[in-house]
Image (cartoon, rainbow, N blue to C red; front, side):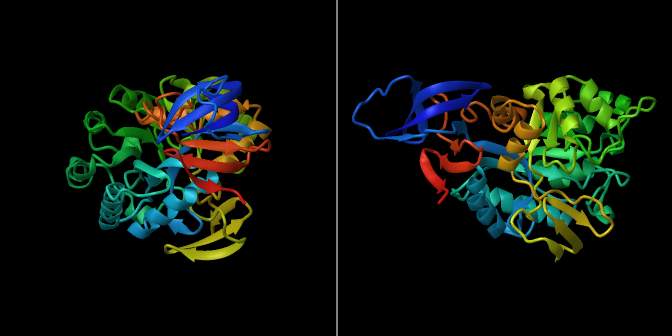
Length: 381
C-alpha cells in the first residue's frame, strides 16, 4: 500500500490536494486524508495525478512498428509508459492479406503472453478496406473491397482481438457487414473514405460509430457536396479521432471540433508511425522513402505519412494552442478513448475500485512518472 498526494484530474474535473490510496493493482480511496497514518506517500507538489493515457490509434514508436513482428509489440509496449500511455490498440497498415493475418496472429499471441509495460487492449485495423481516392500514405496496391469472403477469412477468426476497423463505407460489398461486425463486438470507423454525408448516415444506421483521424484522408467539408468530414461534425453520435500535432490540423479547427463534439465524442490520438525519436532526415522504411522534419513525416511526394507525435505531446498541444482546459484534454485521452471501445469499466479514472493505471505530470504537463497496475514502470530521471 502507498499514497500519492496532490491535485487529481479525473472525470473531467480537477480535485485539489487529494490523497490517492493504492493497494495492489487498484486505487482503493481518493479523499482529503490518509486513512492509514503510517503508510508512505509520494507528494506531487506541482503538477497533476491523472489516469493513464490510452492511445487507440498508434502504429509504433522509436523506429518500431507493430507490423514488423511480435517482438516489436514487446518493445513498443515497454516504451509507451515513457509517454504516459498505459493502454493502447496496436494499429495496422494497409498491407497484403497474408501480412495482415501475420499482424493479427502476433497481436493475439502477445496479448495472451502476460506482457509487461503498457497494456494491449486489442487491435485497430486501418485498412486494407479503404478508398484509393483518399489512401493517404497507405499502400494503394493492397487496398481492396470489404466482402463477405474477407469477413469470414480475415475478420471472424480474429474477432476476439479486433477492437476497431477503419474502412470506407461507400466501398463495402454489403452494408449488412457493418451490422455483423457490431454483433462481434467490433467498432467500425469511417476513414480513408470518399463517402458522402448520405452514405455516412446510412452507415450509421447499420452501426458505424467513429471517424478516423478526422479531417485527414477523407472527402471534405464542402458547402454544396458535404463529405465524410462534414458528416463527422453533423452527426452527434459519431466519435471523432483527432491528431493534435499542429501539422495535420490547424489549431482553430481542433478547437472547432471540440466546440461541436465536446469531450465525450472527441478522442485524442497520436497516429505515431514510429519516427518520434528519430533524427531529421530521409529514411527507407517498409518499402517507402520517408522524410522527417521536426514533427512532420512525409512521403517523397509530400503526403503526410502518419505522425511523429506521442500522446503526451498531443495533450500539451491542445491545452497550449486550442483553448481546451487541461481537465478536458485529459478526459479526451483517457475516458473518451476507452469509452469508444467499451473498455471504460475499470480503467480511465482515478477512482476507488479502478485499476491503478496512473500518470504524474509536472507543472509543464510533461510525464514524470507512469504507474501500471500499481507498479511504477517509468520514472523520468
